[in-house]
Amino acid sequence: MAAGENANPFHSIAYGFWIFMVASIIAVTLAMIGHFLGSKGENTTAEPLTEY
Image (cartoon, rainbow, N blue to C red; front, side, top):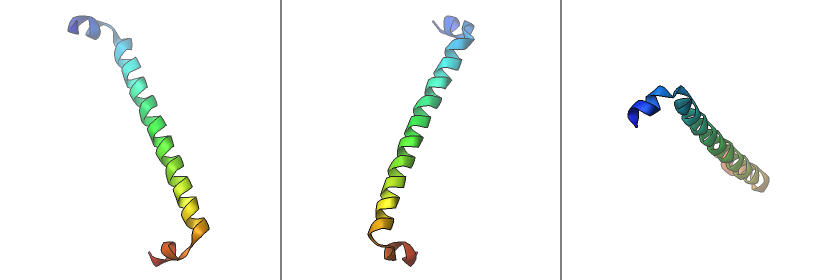
């Protein structure tokens, strides 16, 4: 099996592609969550943000 996987270069390319896709989806999801949490914090009070 190892020899067959090494003989096919597209297998590693597709594997890296799916890792990149999953990482991108996770990054976009976390960015959206952080954006919505940040906007809610700004809409309620600005005092906790100015303390830092």
